[in-house]
Length: 182
Image (cartoon, rainbow, N blue to C red):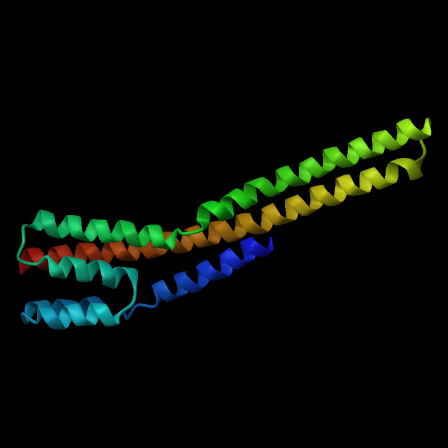
């Protein structure tokens, strides 16, 4: 749980940084390109440290080449940016899926311990069974708590990434439209 919380916090820092984009960014890029100030547009992209800006910068660097080259460059950078945003998600999903299994393993081990205690004692009494049952229940609850928390975190992060990807797609479409007119 502690490691998964670290992953969540680290991803939130990255995603928060990725969503801090100037609302006038594309308008400024559009103005620079229309004015023929390609270098100024590239410098603006470099100063704007977001996935969309890095993608737009790559597209701008391909202006003058065939449109297919521009689109492929944008798409390639976009894929790399999405991969960076998704870093650690597989691990978080694995922990969320594995935590209940570990809890259930503890349940089985606790029940085995309870039955061993009954076998050694030769009779059934609440005191003999209670220790094994307690271990079984604690491990099950622990596994479920970890899984539930991580599932919410995972879904939240995925929705943030989807929002960023949508913004990146919008920016790339705007640039392609602009380059076609340029």
